[in-house]
Image (cartoon, rainbow, N blue to C red; front, top):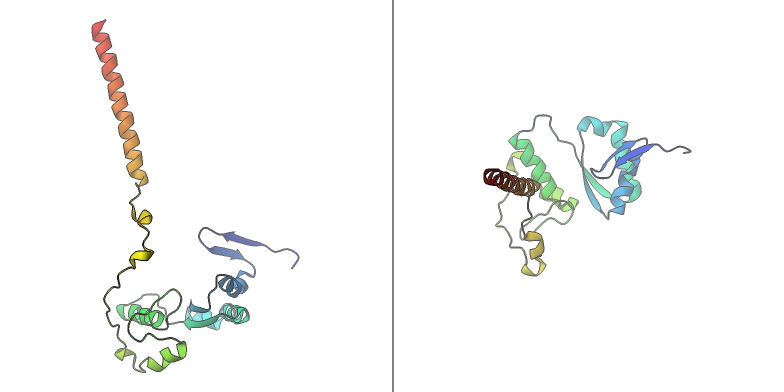
Length: 174
């Protein structure tokens, strides 16, 4: 391609331009992702754009699973379905807890009940964060920008009041 025209906003990870969808697989491979969850509208999945995403991931050697049961008006049931779908197969952005977590998509599909109404989320107690990994410097609260501004304006107000009081006292002496 002689002229590549693409626009990237790195701060928000949004890209615009011709051919950027074909780079999805390469980008995920560069990040070290081995297994991805692709959340896609079922209509988009059937269009060429959905095929471009799947082909890009295949070409980059990134395993993926498509979740296409998204809804315009989500319900509690659809949220639970999405949570169960993402948590059970242990995608990189998700972690399954318990004594026997699923280790592959094949195992996930074997364990998944055919009747969706029998799916359930089992609550587990929170795990304590290991003390040796704790970084206490990160836990210190930092002043909010509005707190800093309030202190600065407070100092200016006090200095202004003191200056006015000084001028008034000086006028009275004269």
